[in-house]
Length: 292
Image (cartoon, one colour):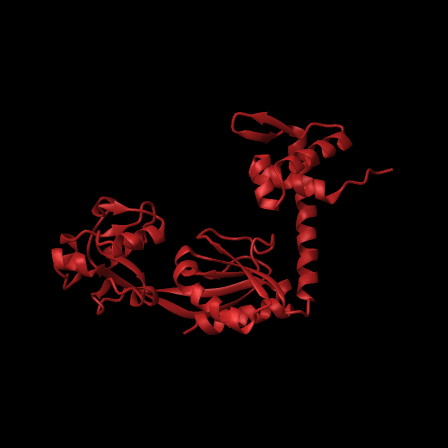
């Protein structure tokens, strides 16, 4: 007779295998480290095998653990899909919605929108993941994603919203000290806040006829919140969405005649959730308020 396993123990096994430690798995699952350790120990006892080896960097899967992982992952995907189907049939608007968006959108764009949602739908609880990495909708890391690119993930439904125009900005203090550039060529004489590894700003300058490389930027960071903070602090010239720049009294828009392009905005949710009244309500509310 085949052994029956507690699905909770398998979930813990998957979380530990993914996170590499009991403490990280506990944070991911909202449990405690001792509970995670107990689940793993029980599962190992039931199977009669060792699933993890302790190393200096954490827990690593044994060969048997790797083999079990290959079987457990499809089970987790099936369970997630089952939960999605059940959620998609939900009729109540009350409950939790998990949204993911880039750092900039989550910090400067969504707070006002979500505050208005709170007024209209007070029984909806919001969990906001501020992250520039791709969240997996199937694995329920988020119910709704705000993305700046066309989604390629399968099993999602998406809506293209208005593009977010990009502007060039500098603080009034910086401009008082260094002057105001009148054209792209003048940018060669200014301090510009750039990306550390990203090539977008470099590509933009090159497209406009100014050949620069990474060393052109005296300050570099891939964190857009930090980059914007450096601009408002007066370090140099930087870039942001027009909606964000327009709300910041400490900065002035520069070279408004230069087309800096725009970011496409896509609103995405898993296809199984499109019949959920709660997800649909928040999805439509975000679309209405992000689209202008």
